[in-house]
Image (cartoon, rainbow, N blue to C red; front, side, top):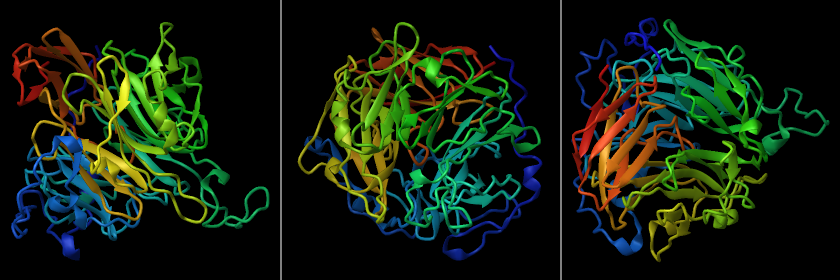
Length: 543
């Protein structure tokens, strides 16, 4: 177990340089202090809605976008979407690129949403939420396609204000995604910024002399280096080279998780272009060594998204990589007897994914029967003429042994065809099951309400004094004869963050008998009081 420092005073130095707050409709909030902010982020003038569409189990997932108010969320520029609680009311909201910048739609409590509040006035293709500088509220890292990365402090009521003290990354490279982790046991979340390719040279010519312009395929451009911001006592510092993370790579996805099970958080990175995905193992002191080949990650991918879960109930973690190449579709890494990872997607019934270009992905128990299912969105990569082919959403049900079967239904929300990219997951209507929201190129978001027949479930929230999400925590739920394990990972899927609430299906059990939490620094805590099915509990760290 690692010794953790006293809970840090987040952002003490950085708070001294506030830029003006941003307000919906281009007005300004007062920036005097949180105590002076007297305007609530609620939608009191919102029109009353008709009743929600009646649940229909035959549809599996029902499209409730129009009813929810999210149909107004037009999208011209950004592929990302997040499902996070930005106003501390226990309900997950939706953050999405709409019009000139990123906006947040606050959840009214029934799965419908208010008119948006802005996060950025212009730009921003995706936002990722974590406690980075505030005392308790979720802050936002905003990724721009031109390589800009911005930090916004969350005020806890749906509003955000920019933090100009956050160091600007070198503006050379297309921004893609962000992941978080306490990689050095400092009690603070550091930031890894994944980037894809460098821009066209100023000469307008590639190294082979061919012209370089907006129609040039990204695969023809040199790879960009990622940027790693270590979160120190004095703020964020670019330590990319010192951390061993400066190797250029076409990165579209990044996830923080303990890949080799030795305690410290590692990084698994998703690369575009059909090459092997790097896996950087951490020494727990803020530096990394690439060991993917040794661990068995040998197969090349065009990775768009990542997630990890125990799909076969053996207590070990499997890793899913969504792949935009239709010849692959998705890659499932499973730890073999020797400890090396093997690609076993076809063995587990996922061969059908080879027909699709898969992006956002979630490994969740969508029917609350006690095992992990798979849901993803798809859409072919954009061609040189700026067009892409739309594809439907995909849902695979687990039979309890790790064998997946695709399920479809006429009229289901899964049938919608679009150039889908981002996908985030949360229980938006607070009915106990996991819903999904999808973003697509040149379209608004789609809200897929889960109408599947459900087993029992509990929802768990982790209260950790240092940060949230509690990346690196491992939660084990005992329910009858079952032991169900969940890992808290850094930004799974593609294009944003999903709910910090941990949903655990327990099937026919009336309660979770006990919950064990292994906190990120190694301490293990057992909560022995049963958690009744259908309830949400907060599990608080106790030293």
